[in-house]
Length: 470
Figure 1: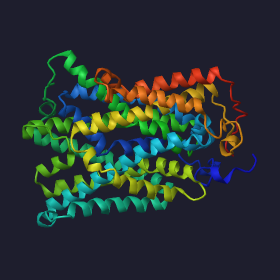
Figure 2: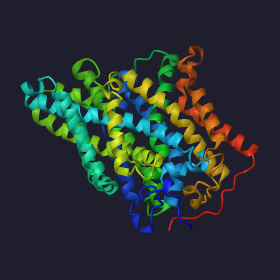
Figure 3: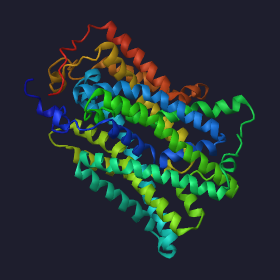
Figure 4: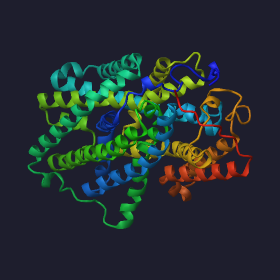
């Protein structure tokens, strides 16, 4: 392999070596358990109860959404494990060496929003803990914001320590969170009297049409929840010991972890309706409602560990690499992580979590319309156009198989615009709002089909000989 273009590579973007491939099946199972067992997953399920579903409807919606998103997840993971390359480098094959910055920045902006959301959750958890232990201090003006910034700073410290700290953090966090989730479920069950009482809240929908009106956008939100990782999963699978390790680890870890933890969220939220007369979808608020300091303390410690786990794993690795891809010579993984942190503050996460409608129908469904088209183009390019064969050398050169027109593939950009435009047009045209309800699906299939037609109609770009990372 010839020397790479320094403007397209640094040590964080270069293919991983054999020595760096240390992640086995357990690490990927632990990754998904760590990222699934946290507050926004809980709220994902509990918000469905708050919107009127019963526990069976909510659980089925979550499970179906995660089985759907697992498909593009595993497809995009393949290139990371095979070639050892991260997402912003892989996407150069379809968008071009310069054009790749467009989908990379779309993904990074969404991650910044999630980073801010998770930091806000961690901060409010600390504040709630103080409200139980030291109420007079917690009531002081500015304490909540100090807790928020303190937790944000803790995340920045972990980012500065690098990607290996993430693997160690999640190896500990996964079993810890499993135990804490089970303890929460048992404790609330005892409060409610029985599992039957916990799950007795009936569906609020009195017709199939009323249910489907909530079900379809909710399903899109479930897919959208992990639409981010469906793109940048190569950032993790590039460290896999083998293709089998990452595939089995993810195929087991994602649906099982999400189903188990959403069941906790569904059960506990249903129990809150029994205990307090209305569903409380925010677990931090729920813990405070019991006014039991010891229970609240341990529950909120678990929330902090879970939030730190998912924030670093899901919301720092990808944007750090994406921002690094903009200017590899100046922006390292650490610098990219700091940029992520500051943009996360700027996106006002407290507004995104204000209500279940803001969270599901605004945030989750909305950004799924941006990321679904990128996933469709990536899957189409790698499997249907390239047949999984990439010229790794050309991914790191301005002049090569993926240079296209001045570093940009206009066919990919056109397909992206078509996919995003059709997915989000329902926001402005009320008669087409159904397209927005299916935003991820509309964007994925529209952009993927458009890209395939445009690439087949043009002179095929040479994919070159496949070169696996040394």
